Image (tube, rainbow, N blue to C red; front, side):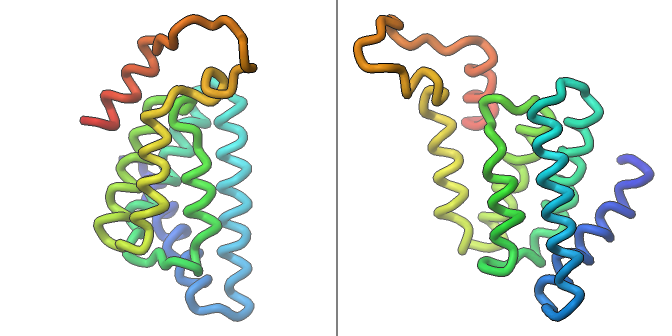
Length: 156
């Protein structure tokens, strides 16, 4: 575990609790969600391992604070995590997301439906193939080895 992980964990926990408490402190949660969104978008664009590891650390910190996450209060951060495209995510980010949603469903059944939708989407062909123009001759869909790896990681 990285030396900065306890600090990140404390930051994430404080942001989540500040949203539950409401009032002026809830701004810290909003700031956290914005920072997470920026990091998620950077990791989508950037192929460097550092941005992917940082995103995975944020997701792991969320998983470690999952007992504080509440439906309706924390929908924006849960939505940001669930917007990560598992087909395109690096292995470290994909693993962190899968661990988070597994823990989230176990701890808080209110998120079961939302998390199951994400998992079901992982069994469908990637969107670029699924939304091909009618009549386009793509031939039968064949998953590439990376996609098979994602599927085997999910089905365990």
